Length: 208
Image (cartoon, rainbow, N blue to C red; front, top):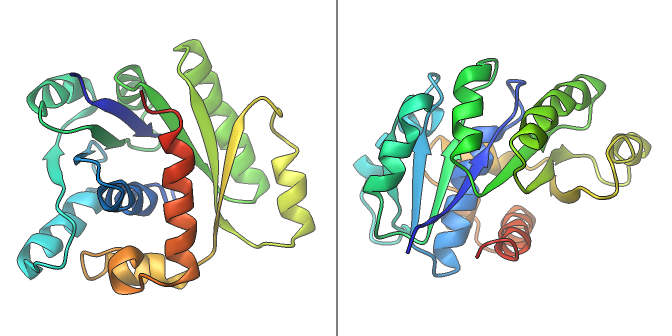
């Protein structure tokens, strides 16, 4: 059976895309899915994270598979990953051709958006690409300042028909990445972990 493929895509850099991809991969692994990550971003944030993770080599880690690919070759990597349930692709910002290739390969597209006007405009550009490819999608609002009027305004910028997920502004997300880990492993009882697991459960409803 073909793995379900989620592409994390944004035309804007700095949205926390790679951090979300890593955390969601480990969240799904905790939820008993066999998961692979594919890094198509030239910045190679996930590649660096995974390298640190492999060096640490702890039995307490959740195991995932990993591959590197340029966007237009990503289908070749997907075909090699036959023994997983789920593949998460981290796509590059500012590279429309590469992003389109990663989106075309997806069964579902997750679009990170920070609560700022610049992110809203960039997210609309990404949404246009996703809608042209006719892919199911959701927006994940990242680094959210809860109880903020701005967050409510930003959320209202998008159609009610688009599914929305919310993740707070948690230092542990970035801090755990420095160790090749995620909040799920460094602070399993934290609010950050609760939020990322909840995000994975919401996305799990779309996985066929």
